[in-house]
Length: 389
Ligand SMILES: Nc1ncnc2c1ncn2[C@@H]1O[C@H](COP(=O)(O)OP(=O)(O)OP(=O)(O)O)[C@@H](O)[C@H]1O
Ligand SMILES: [Mg+2]
Image (cartoon, rainbow, N blue to C red; front, side, top):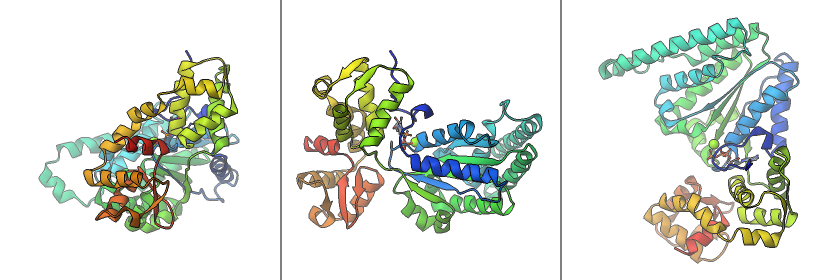
């Protein structure tokens, strides 16, 4: 059975729906840089949004466009997924970035010999650095702290010079989940990255950086490294409107020649239930396809096929959301539900320390902060779920 919907990972670029403004901006920027031979500078982009909204999918879509849809420009592109461990300190961070981006080109036939040799040489140096670091005693390591042994911007300038000699037009470095950088040293690593980006720009290289992070990251970054934000054009990924939901459901069916006709009524229903959230749309459509593969689905049939929807959502998501909240935070959540309306203001909650608690719930992505001091739960079905608690 063919089922192209998968909620557990980024989408196949061929199925990627919606977001045409962002895709166009990205594509044209790359083409302009390439066509103008670098007179037009690359615009760095930051993509922010709640969990499951499509940040990682967007990076892979970008990567796919760079390979297939950018007017034949020669482009070096790498997607780097950050992990907490790669952000332990400045050296580790630089090494992780370099290793990750070089490894993606280690054994590709897309590069000519000279660049491949360069990539492998650089990787050997990094490996040596890693071995040295492992053998250092904590005592020496403490003394050596502050010395940056891995010089990110130098290595990147060397890389660009090789790429330039190989007639490359631009290099696009995409870093997924930048929030891990903030966990350590309150943003000191971001300062480093920013300085490196400025150095690279001044050195006349053509690197374009794309980063992703959670919707509520920017206030944090602003405190920690305000000028960092100026280096990026910011894009917020939001939930889909009806047309977006429709495209997300229909595109994979078309690409895979699956002959299931899902009526607009059903799509409207799915849109309503999921509130246009891509992760939940994936989940519902995947289940629907598991139950029916061909013919036409009507609204009535859909309700019959899917009576246990709320339970399914609870199993895959809401149980965890609730488990991740502290007792005090849960009291705030339950109070919000008991008020019986969509949006509540802080003054209505009347629980001591509720400003802080709400703040933490927003950080955990289960409460959304609206304007004018109003708050709401992140999903309608989550509210129903809590009501039963
Ligand atoms: N534009 C899109 N078109 C089609 N499917 C999408 C799109 N955006 C997201 N999805 C689907 O939504 C789900 C979540 O996407 P993704 O993993 O990219 O989100 P994310 O923002 O990176 O999430 P996280 O915060 O957990 O890292 C996946 O099932 C993916 O297939
Ligand atoms: Mg992701």
